[in-house]
Image: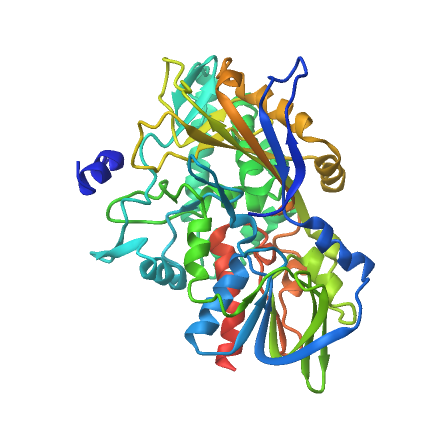
Length: 534
């Protein structure tokens, strides 16, 4: 394996609103003089949809197409329309597009506020690889396989796990694990490998990305009616190490535990990644200091004249004159309307149901569950994160037995690895009942979340308090869709994706049931195709 950090050294020549105020803590269970900022998307403006307290429409204009929502799905749809020279406007609630692939920046580095990497993509969906080639993420092809830009392939060391008071390489528990548990872990890996290569009676891959390309063979889709926890029990898996590992993976991709996640979705996590490359393997990831905001910036390139920010869409209705899209311009405090031939709604379903009050889409919105998240970017100085034992600081650093998912070294991809200051991006899904967890998310203050974060980080780094300069905590009320039991192959997900009278189309990763960049990109492209082909 190439040491990419050395390769690049040689190659280069030997804003979102703040919700909580900055606070200094002096409590005995928190370190003194840590500046902590509590921020997040503008949920208060979004919640005006429930009150519907909007005034008269001040102005009207016409467009061929309106896209509602500027996350990855909306931007990928916009990119396709732009390439086809179609006149459109994109309405985005926040002050900048990106959704949960947004980022921040301080004097140390850029850092992610949400999604932070892209696995090596499968070759089953050419549109994504075409985009990556345009973006120079894929620099070319050799023997039919992509060559990935070495700047963006995750440098070594990639990941480590803190277990039994020291670090081990890799995230699956190995160090200090009894032989019987190792055997069980091995059997689980073998089973997932079987599913990875399985195909249904229809000839399709059993578990594929995009999800829509997966086999509909009941042999596999019936797994959706079982929880991942029940599946593991049914297969005779009982190792506490294995159960922790699978639970960690479900929390990482779905924001929930194995108890509430569809077994089909859980297996998909382990068996759907089949990407290949000349200079990498399928388990490598593409990553950037700012996370997937890097990809967002490429998607929105040349779209500045089409994007209207601080725009809350509150009503979409079909009329004789076209599709009427009414929105509140928060910057100008005015209600406006665009009359369009076609509309793409690229917002989560909990929001889209509010803006289509007169249209029955024949699905139960309650089937769409969303996990709340905490993402904390921790600015540090002169920090010894290696503890002089075990594996050195990696890109992904996970702590066995913790509620949080550990932290990413957001400065990992920087060329200058000798800088003393670093940003650690800590991730914590709130895996309980979503409504109650959302209430906790917004009710608790910054000091509460700081204590939760430090409780995890002090396990491998007992002296970390001394090195923290600031903690920026970002709250996601609806961070990602949860593929609950029966959801992936149930009627609600399918019905919610259906267009209305060939005039209103839907594009969001929650329609795939899995909140990953590939699915969001796919949904946007497919929605735009319906308009372009028409």
